[in-house]
Amino acid sequence: MDLRSAHVGYLTTIDMYPMDFEEFLIANGLGDDVISNLKQCYTRLSHVDDFVHDKIIEAFYTYLIVGGMPEALQTYLDSNDLVQVSKVHGKIQREYRKDFTRYEQSKKLKLIKNYDLIPVELNTKNKRYIFTKLDKELRFDCYENSFN
View (cartoon, rainbow, N blue to C red):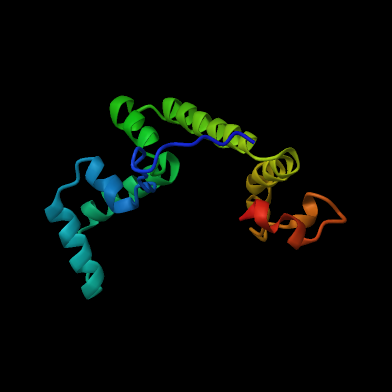
């Protein structure tokens, strides 16, 4: 296992998360006034102008494709090219897989199997992750830590 040590206080840990839809809208130049108006309409359960509604729905569909990963979003903003965004997504996925190498061999193999099975399982009709697809003899408790 590759464990590296750093002196206490030398390293600053920052928790980062993907951008949510509101942050995506802001990054795409939607003004605070429009977002505020949308929030008010939502709170009051009132009608949103059809033009605004159509634009927000279009932005939401784009968000579903681009996602909230900062590099993917920046690539989209810079190029407006979903092929380039897809390349960034592929790079991110490769980095996740590369990260698995930090773990001992048996856990690494379980992590890779779990990771590779997620899209397949979520593409089924029931949208559930079924562990027995990894191995017929499998019990959840064997893979629980790897999955989590």
